[in-house]
Structure formats: structure tokens, C-alpha cells
Length: 594
Image 1 (tube, one colour):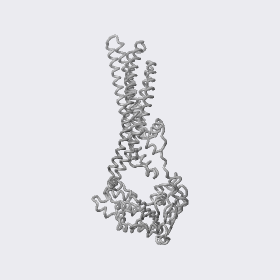
Image 2: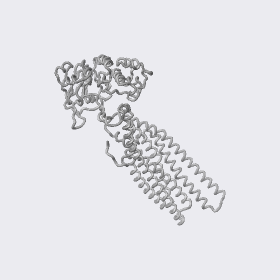
Image 3: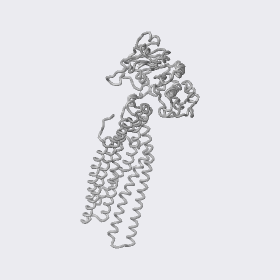
Image 4: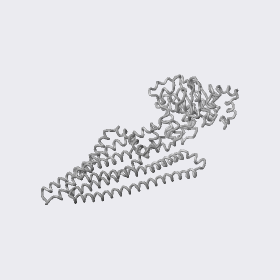
């Protein structure tokens, strides 16, 4: 994550990040700014000026005459006209922000979704999913608050203050200087107070993210909680986390109370002081009664707006605090990127080669060092080895979830870094050890990797994976919603859906990572037969602990410490009496022993 910056720097960075989203809809945005300025000037500057003339006309009139009344009615009419202009302009500005605001929020959430999916695999390994979702939602909500309070609040207040100073300076330079001095003092005090409060808001946001992440984690793993009878422990832990959120929220609210009291006291002091000053100036004959009313009207308008500005500043900094965590994520650089000018995929045979590959998750922790492996197209290869031998890393490098640090991985002689990640993975079917299903229908899950799949294609793939039978027994059949991560299905059923999806994709390269580990022995036999048919003329890599699934492999690679310790067929490796033979003799019911 990026190093913490001063509050104003972070706030400016966030505002500048959001500004292009508004500018995409520059027509509405420009009209919004224009109508806001006109509305402020009309209601906050011109109307009080006509009221001043109204008071001065009455105060200086020697008697009531038709001419006097005509002049007063004219002034009254102008007050009404400019008040109407104010209402219409603010309605127009609200209409504009109602048009571009939701569209900008949509664009921000779309871009966040894209950004998250471009992040490296390591990010998701160490980050709770629930906290990511909370950060994205707070980010878009933060834009909404920033846009609303800066654009409709602070911008209008700034226009009002500048215009007031200019108008008051025309009647009295002294009053104008008082306005300027008070405005500067007020802003300095409030900015300092709000900056102090932002630290409280950041603490609250972080506590809330931790609580959201823990909550999502607990709900996702509710079955584990029940199986191990750990609800009371989880509940006690959750109570501690929510207590931290409550304490952080209480401190944030106390901060708001202090700032509100400070604002009200400053505005009351300046109102009384300004009234005293205008009375002295009137006594000296420097200003008229109308100017006293004008000054007090401006004080009331600006005082009310400054009270709102204080609340808006707090909301702005609070929104910035909400956005900071997601901004840190946005600034992360993807570890794997597509080339600027990608080549056209030339994968026809499926020949895979690791050429002097070096890779390590950390500088002092090397997984592969000058590792080389050649897999001819169409060959069925099993990968085995003890935990930490490099099996999962090998698959991740081939799928380009991570990039090699030295050397190259090629398919049919083409460096996989020379094509896009989507193009690479579209040529590979992958069935992971843990089935990855969406909270969608069975039909959608099977067809996920094949956009143009027909109903017949989906059913055929399901039959090949021996999933059609249990699907047909369900009330909604292929329209059955599987639940989050497929929770409504058994482990074996989830695995068969994932296998059907890979079969339907019909890619030239097939990777099975413990793909039959959740199946009973009868289902495994059917699936193994289906895999044998699927693997014809396809390069197949099988990572397995159930060694019985590897007996028909053309070749078995035994990894040990990131190197190829043994290479051969099942019978050959047993005769060598090496690592593979040791694993085979220690397995129980076809599984590797611990």
C-alpha cells in the first residue's frame, strides 16, 4: 500500500481522480457550474441589494407619495424576480447533477471492478473478499458525497463569499476587510479541526473494514463454524471487533460535536461584532440604514452557509477517508500485464516448454531455478510431489497468474507473454482442486467459458461429466441456482459441474488440479473415462494426490524442491524405487498419506 500522505494531499489527489468522471459529461457539468453561480449571485447578492434600496428609500422619504409607492413596488417586484431566478437556477443545477452523478458512479464502479480483476493473485490471497467489496462501495459512495458537498455546498459558499466581499467593499472597505479577516480565520480554524477529525474518521473506516471482512469470512465459512462448534468463539471475536467500531464511531461523533460548537460560537461572535461595527459606522455617517441591513443580511446568509460549510467539510474529509483504502488499491500496479502490441495466438499443437525458468515468491525464497521442462503436444502428463515442491506454481506460471523472473514459458514455440492473458487462457481448460462456481444457475456455470454454447452443448458436456443425472433430479433442473460458491451442491456435484465446464470449453490444453478428488470411486471411474476421451489429441497436465488417476498418463513428472527428480511412466517410476515409489507405497485408498 502507498505511504500515508498529509490529509490535504490525499484529499486533492482523490478530488482530481474523480474530476475526469464528471468531465465525461461536460455538458451537464458546465451547465451545473453556471447555474450554481447565477443562483448564488441572484439570491445571495442581488436580492439583498434590492432590500437595501428598499430600506433606504423608506428611510429617506419625507412622505408617502404615489411616486414613492411605485418605486417601492418596483423594488419589491425585482426582489421577487431575482428570488425566482435563484430557485430556477438551483433547480437546474440539481437537475444536472442528477443526470451526470449516477452515470459517474456507474463508471467508477465499473472501473473499480476492472481494476480489481487486473490485480495479481497474491492480492486476493492476502485480502478478505468482504473488505474488498466494502471498499468499492464506500469508494463510489465517497464520490457521491464529495461531489454533492464540494459542488453543491462548498462551491456555492465560495462564490457567495467572494461576491459578498466585492459588493460590501463598494459601500465600506472597513466592512469588507472584516468579512475577509473573519472568513480566513474561520476557514483556518475549521480546516484544522476537520483535519484532526479526519484521523478519527480514518480509524473508524479501518475498524469498519475489519468488521465487514470478518463478518463476510464468518458467513462464508458458516458450515465450518457449525461443524467445529465454534460459534461462541466467533461471536466473542466479532463482539470485540464491533466494539472497536463503536469506540471509533463514538470518538468521531465527539469530534463532530466539538466542531459544531466551535462553528456556532465563531458565527455568533462575528454577528454581534459586525452589528456593533455597522452601528458605529452609521453613527459616524459613513453608511446608511440600508447598508446596515445589507451587512446583516450578508452575515446571516454567509453564517448559515458557513455552518453548512463546516458540516460539508467534515463530510468531505469523511468521504475522503472512505475513499483512501480503495485509492491505495487503485495505485497498485498489476504484476502481470498484456503487451502493448500483442501477437496473434499460434497454439495448434499444444506443445509446452519451460525454458530455464527462475521464479520465487520472495527474493530469498526461490521455487524454480533454471527449471526446464518440455511437454510435446497431445501428451498426457501427471505432476506429483510433496507439498511445496512447486506443483501449484508450475500451473500458475503456465496460466500466467504470475510471470517468470527469468527464462520463458512457451506454447508451440510462442512466448506466452507475447499474447494477451485472455488469448492464452482461452486455449486452456482448467479444473481446480476447489470448484469455483458462481451464485448463478447450473446452466450459466457450465457455459461460463463458452459464450456461444447451445443447450445441446451444455447437456452433452454435463452427460460427459456424469452431472446430467443429478441435475435432472433437481426441481429446476439446469435453471437451479447453486448458491454462493455452489454451497447448495455437494462437493462431488460441484466438481462435476466444473469438469463439465472444462469439457464444454474444448480447449487444446487441459489442466486438472486434483479434479477428481471430491468424487466417489464409482463417479471417478466414469469421469476418468470421460477424461480419457477428452484428452485425445490434447495436451493434458494432471496434478494429483490420488496416484491411481495417473496410471494411464504417458508420462509422470516428480517435482522435488523445484527440480525434476523423476520422469517416466507409472511402471518405470515404481521400478526406480524413488520418490514416486515412496509416495505410491504410502498412499491409502489411492490417496497420498500424510
